[in-house]
Length: 298
Image (cartoon, rainbow, N blue to C red):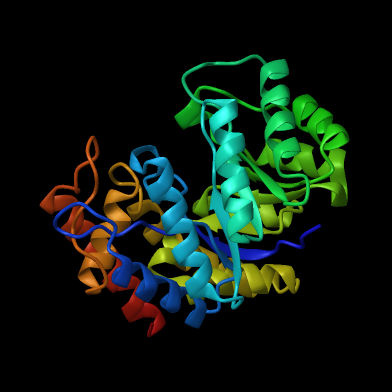
């Protein structure tokens, strides 16, 4: 249903001083991503502070991003929830906007069994039968780990499930999914630092945090790997590693928002319970990004 390869930016949601979504800043961020050659943008993911965006507000962000992209790259809407009914409803609303795909995180806090995870996905996928669905497995945030047997069961039951954002931090898991499912399911790295290793094992790209700041450079790594230019891809990827690490010195998206503030693109605002990083962390992020740019002439 949908070919996915390259770097997809889990785009931040900028806020104005009143705490509302800063629509002008969001438009500018989208334009910058497209100009950087990114394969797609993912609004209302974890990096987009989805837990603190209410239903209408979240769909408003998705609709604005979709309108601004205007077909220039793919748009994948984050529509996950730990309520199956809510995830299905949000997925339907995003599908009505016209996005290329929806991405559903595995239910958090509830701690469902593997059978429960399969049932959750089956019901959400059935709610949007003509829209591609991407699974998002990030057990470090959800306490729910979607295991390969369950992924296989989902793929058999849900023809519109086309990909998985695999964020276990485990390349062995990515290999196993590729081994079992081959071309049936696209594997995308959910960890910037593991992009090259996962692509060497058959993943097709990354849903990235770092590309908020460096879209062209993250996309370059994926393009080189997809072209089989492994030595060049390795060099480019290893140069980015300190930046990838810097993006998680404190809770995401604090560090990446700090980097975007330094670029003059957004206000230094995250929604509670998150707070912006300490000044020491922001200075460290600033130093690492500047060092990378100086080394690459970026």
